[in-house]
Length: 120
View (cartoon, rainbow, N blue to C red):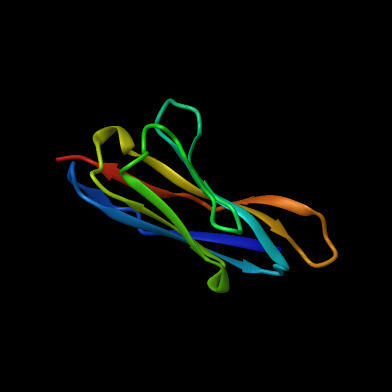
């Protein structure tokens, strides 16, 4: 099995910064793309940012210039640096990973989510 564990969510004031981390563990052969998604109350889950194994990134328009996704392949960890946070960034943030297990097909895995609240 594969587990994704997020950390770093918190209550922060508008204009502040947070860094989310997500560590993957288990019977991992290779991790392909990793990403962050978020879900605000009453809304559908939406893509925030993704990063390929080679480091190519993609961002939602709403976070471009404020958020930076990165990964440490040696640690099977993905990060999301969030700067200049706004109230509309308030949501539960979920980590996602496209994982290839040894002798198994690739599958998508999700973390349990971490709450980010932006409020004064």
